[in-house]
Amino acid sequence: MEQAGVATTVPHRPIRIDLAGVRDRRETPDAWTEIKLEARQLTVAYGHRVAVRDIDLRVPARAVTAIIGPSGSGKSTLLRALNRMHDDTPGVRVAGTVLLDGQPIYGPTVDPVQIRRRIGMVFQRPNPFAMSIFDNVAFGLRVPGARRPRREVAERVERALRQAALWDEVKDRLDRPATALSGGQQQRLCVARALAVEPEVILLDEPTSALDPIATGRIEELMRELVDEHGYTVVVVTHNMQQAARVSDLTAFLTVGPDHAGTLVEVGPTAQIFTNPRDRRTEDYITGRVG
Amino acid sequence: MDFFTETFRPVTIGARGGAGGVLHAIVGSALIVGAALLLATPVGILAGIYLAEFRGGAAATVIRFCTDVLSAVPSIVVGVTAYVLIVQRTRQFSGLAGSIALAALMVPIITRTTEEMLQLVPQTVREAASALGAPRWWATLTVVLPMAMGGVVTGVLLAMARAAGETAPLLVTVLGNNQLTVDLFGPMQALPLLAYRYTEQPFQILNEQAWGAALILVLLVLGTNVAVRVLTRRRTRP
Image 1 (cartoon, each protein chain N blue to C red):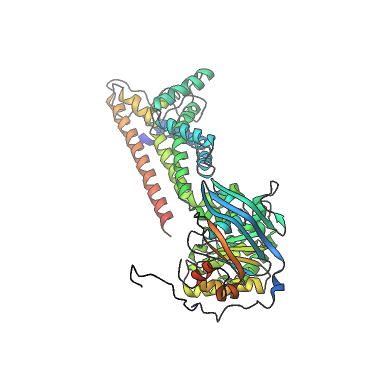
Image 2: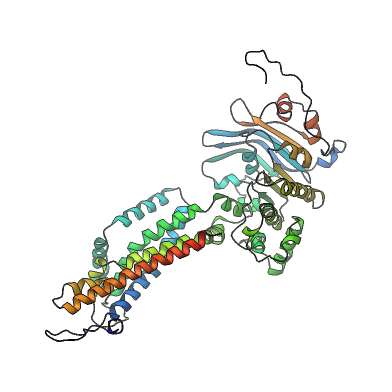
């Protein structure tokens, strides 16, 4: 640390992010031309406090998009606006547009329940319901309005558990309470639960922040598999830059703006954001100078 | 043993031996409180769900206010109200009128406990259900309410114990009856009522039966509370 009072010129430090695992798809930008989810001039406010302001974000189909940024930059707020989770919270106002396949999801005739069936979500802490493993995964298939026949439920539960890489661990105890699973297993169960509904987009809100490194690794592998093998579109909020570098194709960087509201600084291919950011604020953040 | 198996037998001055039992009061109490339970439980639980899950809005404020007022109303006031509204109109003292009066005392207790227990269920659970495309009411029924069930049952049992011991509302509604009856539409006997009436009698044997009835009530309340303890302990254990 430099002494107080000494004029500080921040030396240019080399970027310390380990880039060994960064996926380099810069050469094939065509892969991301299909836009699955798009936010236009999206602003979310809690009462009078604006949490994120004027966000323009395009999420390409069949890719992992990571949203990074310091605490309070509105990452989770932005993510929750993408499948109308704010609708349930009194006092939250959402302005601007969110398009799913070009269709506005905040339209007056759009049912938020239907939107959430197309855009699933996994939360920060594993939150299995107090029921059996099977019933947890089957929950979204037994909801009124989306009820599935019994045989299809069983098939989809198995498929979802396989996709979430949990099947082999739980296939013999599907009727046991889900709360008996370990934290990492519970989180994969929550992913499976979201997958069973067969959404088009999966939003993950810091899905590994409550997990140990091994469980974290499995969730990260899972995110890649969902995109590479099963064709999902994944958006993940993370405060862990290494994680963003490891799993994402695109990275969006949010920061706290001068008006204390979250603003989107830049979006780009992950390799570019981490090696050659266009904005000084992004560089400062990923090199660890702030945040 | 006659105490539990017989009903009232007239007492004559100087006569020795038993004066019958309180079976009619035990049966009466069970029926009156049972009917009150059937009336109060759905209303109380639904009101609790409404307050906890759909709070905000003028209706919730009004309901919460009414609940608070109702829980503070002296039980004799509830009894007199039931007397005016039911007994006078039907021109008939009845067990059912007593049940309705007791139900009015139970509803606020059940409502409050249900609301508090539902509020203890983490918000993340509701979010998770919502994110899976579940409508609010469905999530409440299938996920939130089952998680709070132990506490809700506790509230119902405590309300029942409270109602079983109430005397004042019964005094002016079920009146009392010396015969065994299962007719909820006529006058009945109940344990607290019997205890009250018998203490006013000049016969020592009846005074003693009043003590006996009081003991049954105390044991009932104690038993209920123990049951609640056991239930909640099992619930909190993972």
